[in-house]
Length: 332
Length: 262
Ligand SMILES: Nc1ncnc2c1ncn2[C@@H]1O[C@H](COP(=O)(O)OP(=O)(O)OP(=O)(O)O)[C@@H](O)[C@H]1O
Ligand SMILES: [Mg+2]
Image (cartoon, rainbow over all chains, first blue to last red; front, side, top):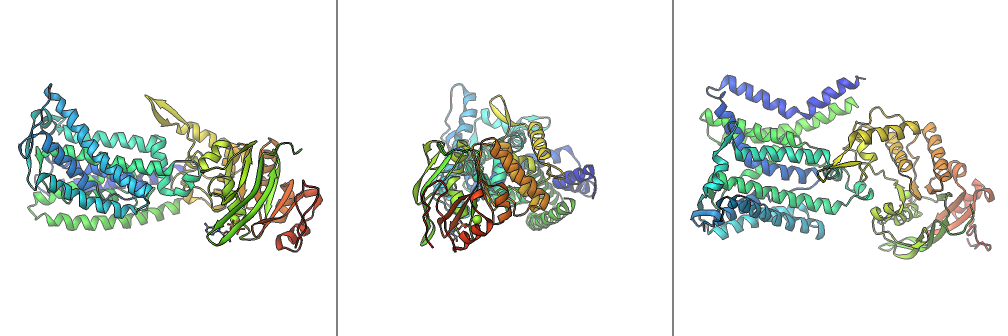
């Protein structure tokens, strides 16, 4: 038997393993890759992590509740495209403006989030009310929503958002562009919600044992529905940020990000069985992915090496999960 | 206990699972502060009946009068709100969170900050610590996830939980199945204490000695029907066993004419 302090320390290390891995990876890259150790490189990693990071929050919440959402990437693209069409001035953009001009910022944000929430609500309805399998429902949405993006854009793109929106991607605060701060703030807010509010506690418990939570009088269906709407709305926010970053939208915007988000969630320590996972770990997972991505770029290796490493990391993360469980059992 | 208005009256409750008739017209009363042992062989319908009372299952037909009002609970939440606490045969714990979170499942202590409910971990921890200590349960740390606790410790958490929350009626479905000798003794005392506060208790058990130790009345279910309803002092373990196996059958204790068949 070990003391409770030692146990707490081991638990802490296990909980934050992905942060430790991130620190090691950054240290190794900084020492071995020329030009890696620069503020600009680190800022770039954080900036690149914005979109997958925000999206991964919604995915993580749905997965912690014991479900699955494959639709987030397409939902993000739809929100980005609608933002582009409404507020970009070139290509298929209709360049909608407001007086005062700054009003386009909250307006475009509200529309993007609402579009995402609508897709999420549709998923929620099919899963909770129609009792369809979440994997199938959201896979279908992944396909049809991307189809919708291509349809409404006619395969063309929208360019040039108004400077009142664009500044979010350009203006830095403490070196980091504002859109990346949005992602960081989202992580802080949702970490708080998951850890310190009954909503987060109930979502976690539903993922652990839905029958027990139902018997305890928790409104399981309602909370599961909310988790899907939330994932949609957050993906809408990710789409808005992505549109700002690209100053418009293309029909294939964000393709492949779903897999990065999934990898980040798994690497970050969220169990696909539900009930287990912390949002800060997910953010560390996203940062880890883009740290490696950046290293491969800097070394001049082709991008598909990133994919191979990512695949390996996902497997390693799952193996690690099993190992962690065994260590915890020994502790108890 | 006198039988003015019963706390709970079950009137001809039936429940089918497809072709299976799990309950075929169950009627009996429970008074305030009364401990009723619900007995019967495996598959007799005891758990099904408990789930119907606690809102987890719908009855196919029949009426239920709880606390003077005709009610049927459509969800465990409704039953809970009306004051019915249940300990299920297959435990209802979330093993992925700690003891404190389980204890307060669905009833967390919160404080509103700018309208946002924030969990009060310290207050919850203290309450659980007090409840667990009072009950004499030993759990290494209230912050360990329940998955690392033994079956007996888990059952103890559920038992302490119902004692803590009280209510008007408590349903216990084989609450001692995983408990050691000492914990069982404490559990039985706990039931008596709870009943002494005027709370009605239904306890399902297969162990005759336990039933005779705590119960004021024995209700025997056999093949979905009440096969016996007798006061403890009017019966013996042997007779109850004969009711369970179908060799004897005695009607409702409160009625003058016992219905005899078998
Ligand atoms: N969900 C269900 N679907 C189909 N049949 C069921 C279901 N639940 C219970 N039954 C059936 O109803 C009958 C009564 O089951 P119940 O669980 O109430 O028995 P019990 O008296 O609690 O038995 P035990 O002492 O083994 O716990 C059994 O024949 C069982 O197979
Ligand atoms: Mg049973």
